[in-house]
Picture 1 (spheres, one colour):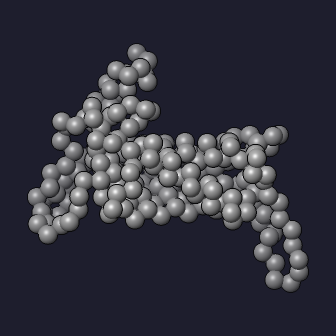
Picture 2 (spheres, rainbow, N blue to C red; picture 1 turned 135 degrees about the vertical axis):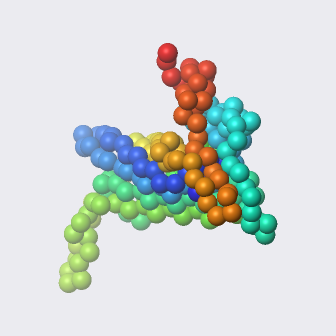
Length: 195
């Protein structure tokens, strides 16, 4: 799993937010294997460019590999308890790509991204024997859910990278974890972390 030039994998994140007087939760899990290092951005900081000279992988084979810098895919699953209809869930799914893009994903030619979004609201909506009713949120009230979606995708990708460990695979191919100490220095340099 390469994520924006470093070891990636699985990450999660969630947000709790208000819509009118109700509290809702939205969470995501990602399987991150995408992007080129030079595009990596964390908290608006061009981390990939700052770490461009830092070795992030050793590739010894397979000589027939067609993998190009930036190739790979991301799978994201988003769950929420906001009552949403299918067309609204599709709009949430569209915001997943915004979070991926903010992190540095560009949807390369070799990318096969999959986003799945579902709501746990309306538990009794399925009924074979009679008419049933469902609740749905007004489209005009969904901005907090959209913002939460973008934020959890960004954070889940960062969490996947931070939790990852350097790994050696077949043929001695090695992908390195993002260096935590250097990342902290870079974020301090751009005033994202206070001394």
